[in-house]
Image 1 (cartoon, rainbow, N blue to C red):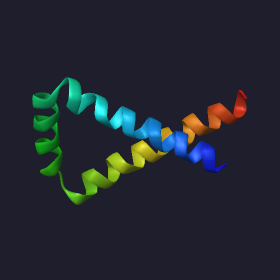
Image 2: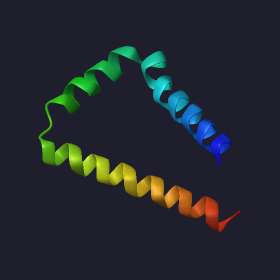
Image 3: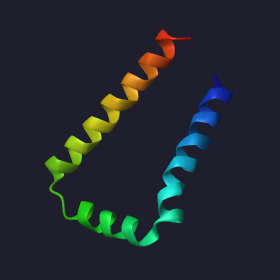
Amino acid sequence: MKGSLIVALGLMLLLEGIFPFLFPRQWRETFNRITRFSDGQIRFLGLIALSCGILVLGFVELFS
């Protein structure tokens, strides 16, 4: 279990780092736009991300 969490953390960091590395200007512009969102909009984005994560984990569990 601990090894899986470390692998998941590594993959998350890898994915989070790809866009700023490859597209720094576009990433900065997008980040600036997101900082102007209201709390409700940010919570909605968080809910969407959580839902997608749960779906991915469900599919992995279903097909393994």
